[in-house]
Image (cartoon, one colour):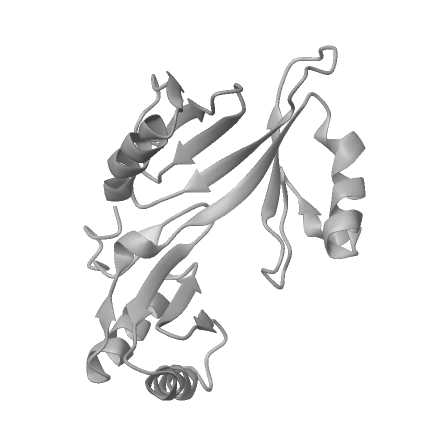
Length: 198
């Protein structure tokens, strides 16, 4: 877990570490973003930052980068809200990802280069990741797409409780905490995924 790595501000979601820092004003957020930019001005590996009206979201695949961003946040008096991070992936069941991966990469990102391994990842981060879940060959079922919602582990119980209260059911939890499958009242599924137990 990233808190064990000395990164309490961050949570590991699908492919990267994510953090949210709360800001008092947009100007304060801009100052923080500028300070992070200055800290990484000569670095080959940099964080991805997104400035919102009350927060700055940060993403990195490198623990040292994440640690440095947190250090800058402390200097600016910012408080992290690690339970607020989330990432949606779309999963498509297929027995042959090589046959359909280039199509989805071209449609979603404009380039077949975005299809790598099991995933189509938009390098700009504007489109949700699409990953191909391997299955045995079969007739097309009624549903082949489902959402994977990556959450901090401590948030999952409250999301399950809210989903059940809204009419959903838990349909599979044998591999919790790695993932738990919920279904809406019509049987459409979503996986709540965490980095734990993988």
